[in-house]
Image (cartoon, rainbow, N blue to C red):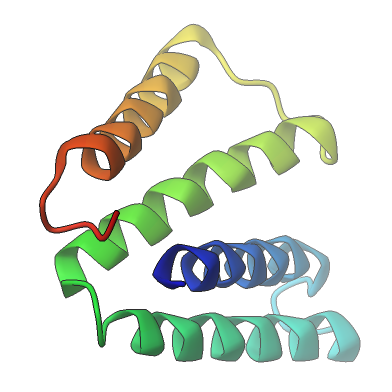
Length: 109
């Protein structure tokens, strides 16, 4: 259950961050409302996850998965190119997430 909530928290964070670009510095009402609502839902879910997982672990997973998701959306939707160092860094983030999930006794399995 914590991982399902974590994935949903990442999805809402990703929606909020994508809408942040469309809000044009909070000058457009509907994209700005989506940003606020999405982040609110995401943080609420994070608070629920932290009842069963350590805050550092939750934040590492949430932020890492969010970075990877936003980088993919930036590439696919906004046409933002990633150079080799960026791809290596994202690969290291994914490796860290896998390491936590597969080997950490702090993560529920």
